Amino acid sequence: MKDTRLIMGMPITVEIVDLHVENQVLESVFNYFTYIDEKFSTYKETSEIMKINRGEINENDYSEDMKEIFQLAEKTKIETNNFFNIKKPDGSYDPSGIVKGWAIQKASDNLKNNGYNNFCLDAGGDIQTSGKNSKGEPWTIGIRNPLNTNEIIKIINNKNNKGIATSGTYIRGNHIYNPNNKDDILSEVLSLTVIGPNIYEADRFATAAFAMGKDGIYFIDKLVGFEGYMIDTKGIATMTRGFEEYTQ
Image (cartoon, rainbow, N blue to C red; front, side):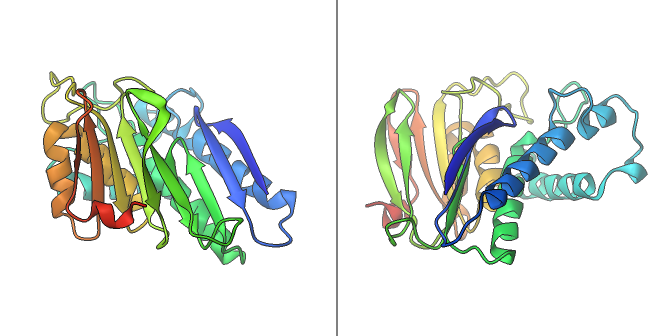
């Protein structure tokens, strides 16, 4: 069973290939992403994060999910030498760089806890797979050419069901900034795909690494359990030392 819906400003695709999947299972996953959007969206005036930015909610009164995101964001900030920071130059908070991967991971865990083992969750190109696809084979993930989005330039054989996240400017424009240099327009890199232990880990480090510019791929290369594939504005690709182990 497979469906795609526009939530959180992006297409979210849920595909579950276990036997006897009912439509309500997909509905529960989409409802969860809708809940996340209502809580963390910086485009919805009624969201909790917007109320926090307006000073309407004290820190002690944050929801448990919000407290967790702020804690994880601070942890990521420390681990990336401040290249990940949900506090924007204007003083407001935008946790989208960590929320998406975290939410996909939570949805994946919920499916597994309910007995589903073969599925793929794709939210705007950030992907978590589990088990096998409808053909009984490992899930495969394509990396698009940012200079020609109709072209797949690498195919990842995700036999170990890692998390795969891509940060870039070629679809959503320049929405990532360098917290250490507000004048850095991050014009050197078009896309950076990160393979991590799970989608939460892959997503948070992909965001931070992209903010590092061309140095980001070397940061990923040094992380144990992570691989990466970067494409710069000239169309030149740079990959980590173990990346090709995942390609077909």
